[in-house]
Amino acid sequence: MDREVIIRADNIVKKFGDRTILSGISLDIYKGETFVIMGGSGCGKSTFLRHIIGALKPDSGKVHLLGKDLSSLNEDEMDKLRMKIGMCFQSSALFDSMSVGDNVSLGLREHTKLDKSVIDIVVKMKLEMVGLRGFEDMVPSQLSGGMRKRVGLARAIAMDPEIIFYDEPTAGLDPIVAGVIDKLIVDLSKKLNITSVVVTHDMKSVFSIADRVAMFYEGKVLEVGQSEQIKNSKNPMVRQFISGSPDGPIKFFRQKDDYLERLIA
Amino acid sequence: MQMKTEIKNGLTVCYVEGEIDINTSPGVKKSFDKLISSKTPRIVVNLSKVTYVDSSGLATLVEILKNMRSYGGRLRLSDMSSKIKSLFEITKLEKLFEIIADEKEAVSTFV
Image (cartoon, rainbow over all chains, first blue to last red; front, side):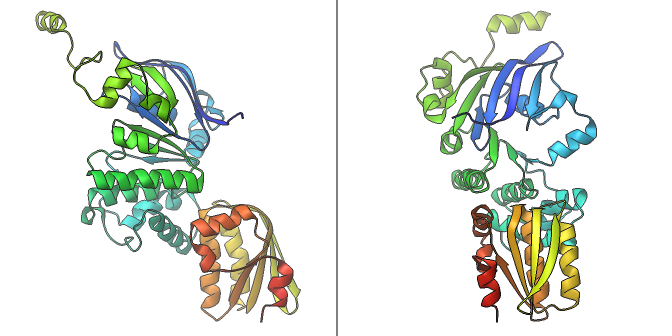
């Protein structure tokens, strides 16, 4: 069965100065799947995420999002497209001066002509979905880290997006709360038929939510496949990353000679 | 989105057509505001020609129900596609509304 491609990255290259961050990433992400991008710090996964939401432009290569070539869109067209996607940030990115309800309804108030009474009902519906019934009048500082993440999630789904992007959704959470967030990601994806793209290096999270997984290493896709396939990968780098072993082909420290050369450069 | 109303068996039947989403929900609400301001006692909304409802559409229907209840009015929804019905189930709204399989039944049993 042919699956509908909802995001296509075609040979994306990005450099910051003389450092190559992405060196030719090509990936297809399908409608309705939960796609996880994993890899160590600095492997380019968050930079890649910024490219597929149009926040960064590649030096070369193309991104197609919901059938549109991002390089061909003007600002207005890009804004319209962004209304169809939701973002869940690592830090939750809530406005501390606003109530939970106002944080969730921000996009609806800014981009629609809906009456306040209708927006208030949407907010209640979304907070119910993330298990925060009755929290609309609280402010973010009164909430725990896990609750803040759930408010961020309610805000991400407020405008019924077709795709949600998650950047390290379980970072800094205890294992139980992380499990709650993982379950929510899966439930919302399946119930609302949302495509989810999750960037993480939380291994427990990867294999509890992913339909497919891509492992990034030094700006390249090392391996991509079904969750089980990656879990049982024979690639020594993938195996090392999953097991979290300090010994293996992935070196944490650069070569000593390189360090000495840099000192006297 | 388009809407027309007919009087059947002494009650108002509304036929909504198209999508009820972020763009069209304000228009749907406006159309019902007229019926609500005249305190229409019983309304059946036939949704057979509604192709898509998003959260703002669901919230608009909740708002209409809330406003009708404030003066003792009653609202029934009929002829919902299975796709739209599943949305009501996911959002737990199927327990809030009177959802009747078809318009004929909704009208004939509406007392």
